[in-house]
Image 1 (cartoon, helix red, strand yellow):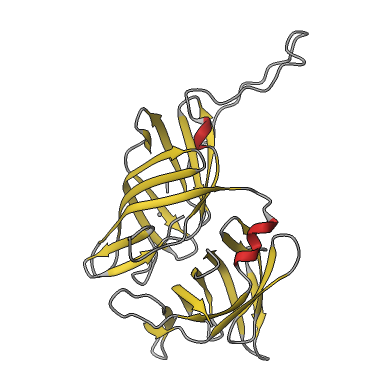
Image 2: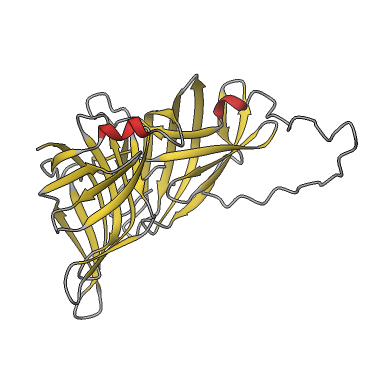
Length: 299
């Protein structure tokens, strides 16, 4: 769900386990159909992928202030029912949120919720998150704040859109294969800039920002599985659902030398067949924790 970058990401409140009441079915209940969600929330349930980010229309582009940073939104959320008017949303970065259904759609309940994003080791608090659905298409707006040693950063998504995704969609994998080149880095918006945190020789933290360059080559495997080869020669396995691919398994490593290992703990790629938008987080060959929000075009 979502993530941003300003040297960290931004998106939840641990949900209390629902209490279940167990009954022994009587003769009339033995063949009864399972209860269906009521209160009009059924239309929200399922997996929803962010559509392809578009900077020209600012669709699925979050703005972070102070500054001019833009954070394309990539990934998914799964909505499930808690009761007749309560929906639980879990994002692909491990955050969980609770929503209440009303005449205007879903809204956060309670109204302010906080999450520690484990993929980027960042905290953020959402004060507004509204969701409306029309068939297989969803619209949302989000306002959040992320604490930082230099001061809080305000995070806002005005034009969020998603499409409902099937769990098994092998035809969607055709959007990904090919040779893709990283776009030029933009220091103003932080696009295509890898932010790495490491420890210097004096034991103090060091933050470096490096333009991401080179090629990403993706090949199709079988069904909805693809393999991505990065410029360092590492290969990574991903599973596609709709327009979005995730690492599968969720954490993967690549040995680049006798003493160096690269670990990815998160990688999400959105593709419309013409462009890629990616978010990557992990540990590089020098033990630096890195985060990258990038766009790619056909090579």
